[in-house]
Length: 241
Ligand SMILES: Nc1ncnc2c1ncn2[C@@H]1O[C@H](COP(=O)(O)OP(=O)(O)O)[C@@H](O)[C@H]1O
Ligand SMILES: [Mg+2]
Image (cartoon, rainbow, N blue to C red; front, side, top):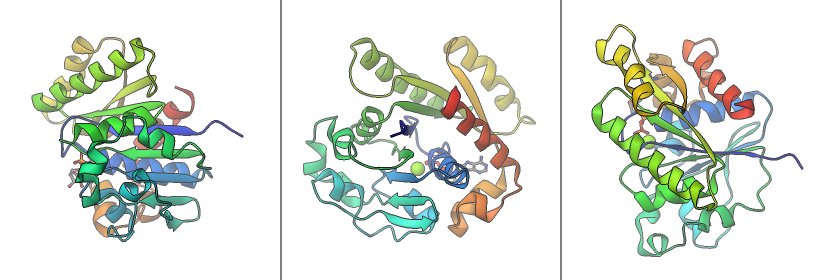
């Protein structure tokens, strides 16, 4: 069996574009022929909703608590397990950090993507520990850079202790508009702070936000938009980087 890609899309801050990127790379990987499962770790279940699934169906919380929820099929190669309020419950809070990694061990997908929520460190950790790769999403706001620094610290500490979880990661500069001074300065700030970490880029593109609003995977919603080229580069990094 081929080794699957397992990627956590994380940040340490909300509103930076995690869910847009998670849905986007899921759509691109599926269009390239891989069977893809997106696991929504957000109590708000934005990723499931944004891909067109019923976000109230059993999903990640039920999986974590030992059930076998059936992933919802979005298209030929794309499935999603919704998040939902169950993820905020005490039972999920008390799980081992390895619980999600264990729960997906026998899954048969070429790619599994975890959309991590902001402000729920234990949920984000479940994703980071189940993943082999992390995308740490950041925009030009200082809070986002601080959030990314915290995630990278957690990842480095775990790797140093040879714990299970993401062994490699990249920063994704998100919603970048190079006409904005702050955005132009972002890369310099990241280079100064995270010298040897790969940097990827998603430019501001209204097609990306429309796709999740219209609840259609981006490759189907807008196959020729600029955002897809940025997403394809990220997928290239995931495959070979
Ligand atoms: N590259 C982008 N171009 C334009 N709008 C974007 C882009 N990425 C995200 N957005 C918009 O920004 C908002 C927050 O994005 P979202 O993916 O939900 O962030 P998060 O999951 O980190 O909270 C949404 O309204 C989304 O449509
Ligand atoms: Mg989100």
